[in-house]
Length: 126
Image (tube, rainbow, N blue to C red; front, top):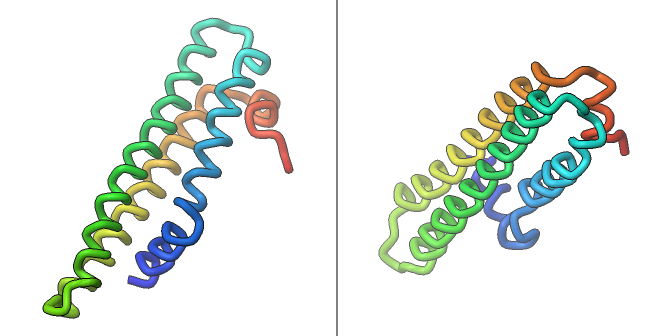
């Protein structure tokens, strides 16, 4: 439940927080892909994985907006029970957990298609 609470505060005060930042990094990697990868089929595969990652974040953002509305509605309702509010926060936790799992899976799928040098071009160190 603590993750849901943190996610909720990030959403309220940060406009989506980490997911927006990561989405930007993925879009930047998509722009850099043609400079890192010269083989056409490999480039197509890498772009497809990156596009799926961006789409997953977009799906998450839409889901989180719905869950946030649900939480706010329950929070504003005098008759809401603790179980209802905890349930809403649990659903937010689950959404974040699902996103994290999917992003980890996509990261390792992407890694199967690039070498370390290409990776460092796609995701340059800070």
